Amino acid sequence: MRILLIEDDDVLRHVMLKSLEDAGHRVDAASDLAQAGHFWRVQAFDVVLLDLNLPQSDQAQAPMGSGLTVLREARARGDRTPVMVLTARNRTEERIAGLDAGADDYLGKPFDLGEVEARLRALVRRSQGASDMTQVGQLRLDRKNRRVSLGDEPLVLPAREFEVLWELMTPPGRAVNKRALSDKLSDFDAALGDNALEAFISRLRRKLHHSGATIRTLRGIGYLLEEET
Image (cartoon, rainbow, N blue to C red; front, side, top):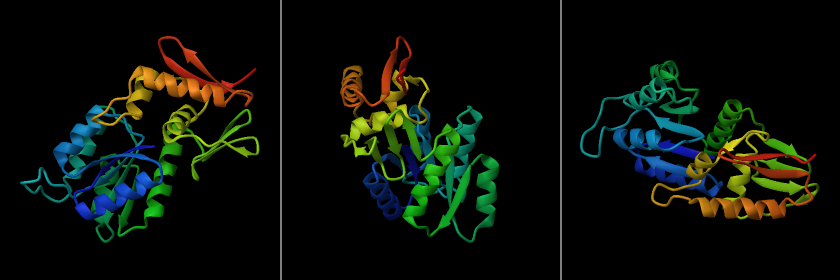
């Protein structure tokens, strides 16, 4: 998953960032309102983790609940990315305000990092019509455990190839725009070029040979993973 983490507490942000990256996700982290708004406008994400108590900048503190601003702006421009709000456990008014502003779920602090990832997976499943286990032909993707198998045999993929396959199978049978796929796999300081993406697709095609699944190129659109007929 491509995750936007918006949290102003340096220690908590770094702990969450490491936990999510160790689980294999691509995470962009923002610490204030301006940075969060910029990241969310210029990059597509699968899900957003949003702390409501954000400063306007490193120098000026904003009032409690300023994270609602970036959430409302996203919803106003038609962005339907799933959002999980992080709140103080005893602040019911924060949870209500976040849900009313367009959040899809909330989690009170302190929280278990395993629960964070599980809830994020659930949000993405609901928004993208996917499940933890997806199969095309003999190709099976286990999102929960980040495993791929062909029949009963594990298929070990480098991280980037796994990410490409994840996008193509979330859910399968869906045309994936080439530019959107490149953006999902790019960092802010290093874009994934067309040649690199095509190289990942080419290597995946070879590894999926005789799997019953194939990656089809849709000219002018992108890619489609489907069952061979």
